[in-house]
Length: 207
Ligand code: AMP
Image 1 (cartoon, rainbow, N blue to C red):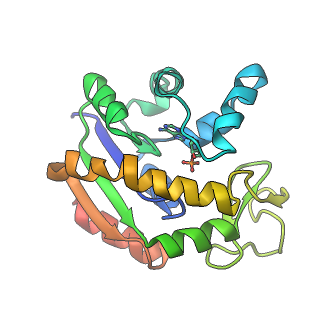
Image 2: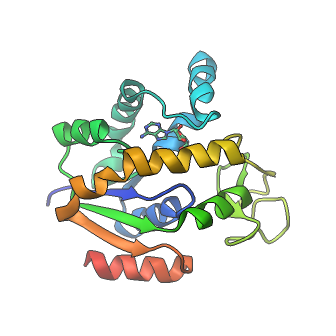
């Protein structure tokens, strides 16, 4: 059976990471979030990467591809891969085509104002990286602490208004053209709904 390769596309805060995680669990695929991979880097590389991320800029393509290629060969990716946050521009999409055949591309759609609101309310666990939201959902059971590991919930350094606005603009200019590039494989889903309903719709549309 061919490996399933899914790509999630959506403006920041669309909930694509949450849906990617649910889909990965259901289909036993690996979930690769380039944002998480970049944030888990260490040492000098981390200092370099953080300087791009915290200003709301893209990390250079060569660096992304290098980190990704290392991750993709791990055994949990044997059944297939869910990409979350990659590709983010045409050059990355063309690079992906040279080493894998994409099965489906899933767009999770929300408005810019919803994106801004969700990102300003986003809190992440500093220990396990799980995301919460003080305005929308999921809200933590105990304010300020992770339901899963009890870690402290903090704001991401790039979730400040200037960096968010820059990231939304970059999404429209650089990432949105991918919807046309992938038009034959595209499944678009309304992301302004509950997590459960979005996932239900996603499974229906993929089958
Ligand atoms: P995310 O967690 O997906 O919001 O990603 C956080 C930040 O990591 C982005 O704002 C970019 O600075 C960087 N990043 C993540 N994925 C990519 C990518 N595919 N290409 C370039 N930069 C990326």
